[in-house]
Image 1 (cartoon, rainbow, N blue to C red):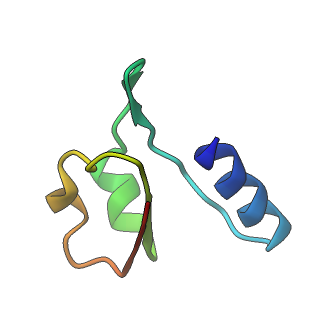
Image 2: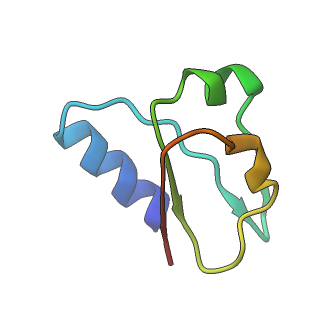
Length: 64
């Protein structure tokens, strides 16, 4: 799963990560405070990310 791989890579690199999943089982969106605190955003997805505008102004990496 992409979320687990990102969490493992962040931990191994000494970084902190918060993952928002969006799937058929539902999602728990990040709060405005979590987004504001983020240094960057990684979109790792198979389908289009919902509400991308929430992350406007943040450096992003977008991969399928």
